[in-house]
Image (cartoon, rainbow, N blue to C red; front, side, top):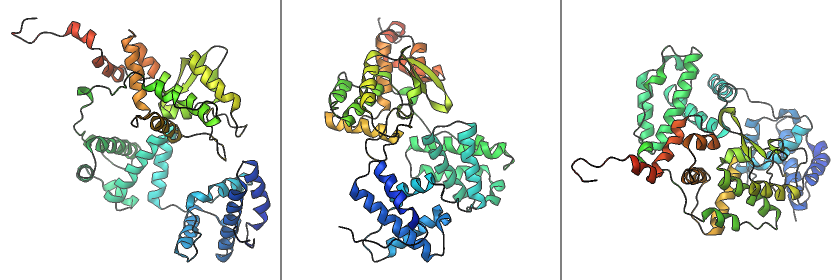
Length: 397
């Protein structure tokens, strides 16, 4: 049993409300007590620093965690353990103050806003671009915004060479794509004088020479059979796996699905994809049945409009990584190697092609913006290819 801690400092008045908040969110008594003890420690630390409740900031919280790590106490919380406390304080109007940014950090924040607001990129894509941008600017500009104007093609080439020495070719291409985006942004904003994005070369790729990786027959059925539909977790996972395998939805699209996106009367599903795109798909009977079975027993925040929620406190909406984890666990239960959600898009396209669907219709179902993307599936239609294949010169047909 944890020893009773004295509540003092600027957060002490919030302890009763925080306890009520945790209990209402479904946290166990032991977890609630742990979080109250954490509030007490943060409150005492703020008091020792001469700060009030409104003095919280990301850097100060980092300092608190680091101070606990350096202490002789065995109780050393991680930064993620502060999330329930920060959510509660935000609900009562106490937000963590933003830290003072350096000029380079301000530039990166401006770039992030550009990616989200003007480009409409998915969060996972934004994070990848930001990682590349931060690394590039720290290395090539020595962390100084004033050096951005002096960037040259030689700087870009040298950076890509360094990256290629430590990364796989596919990952280097991802770095190049992110770097091109940053350089276009800097040029449009007038921070560099030349369109340096043209100085970023492509690495060798074999996309056009390889076949889409599909799945063996029966894999989807084995994954679905592994879900225990008598439990809330199983019903949710069954619905997620059904949407991934049946409709070929991306993990981000499944996670972002809301109750307002399901038109039960018309049998239509609204899918919100990349770059803010929006498309309507027919809602098959088996998919609708899996969704309705889960929604009938769904628990969590009644104000949350996301379809799929966590089953443990705070029972908020799932993220893209959670959808991938659901598929990964189903693979493990079914005794199948980790497949990944994207393989099911290939499998759905291949099956539609086998049943005679034309490429443009497959592209509409998969919500491809460019028919060239869908065209890679033409390579798996061996029977159709055989009718147009020419014999090798000098060989009898």
